[in-house]
Length: 121
Image 1: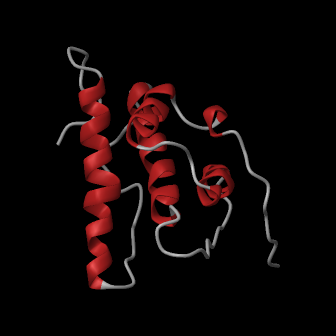
Image 2 (image 1 turned 120 degrees about the horizontal axis):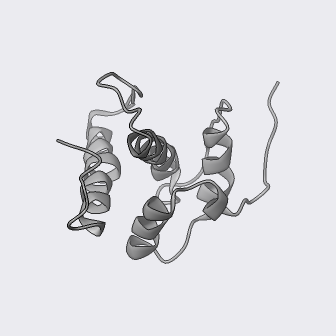
């Protein structure tokens, strides 16, 4: 069954404060796609986001992954295992992993200098 969800959520209730701080330091505001998609993905729903280029589809998925990894790490429950598989439809989109996962993780780490690093490379 396909359901079209158009409810925009307040993402502050879904994202860890540090992850939210990172996002707001990089972007002016969440896009409509992100306000709809992030909560549904966080709730572990099967989500297909169809939207024009540049509307935040990829970052919607990666924000949830980053947030979940961050929460696990804060609880000392982050294990050395695979938590997500990202399938890129085009070779060029492989850059998404760098731009939407590796860079945000490094920048989130840098937000809290002097504190214990949660994510190690």
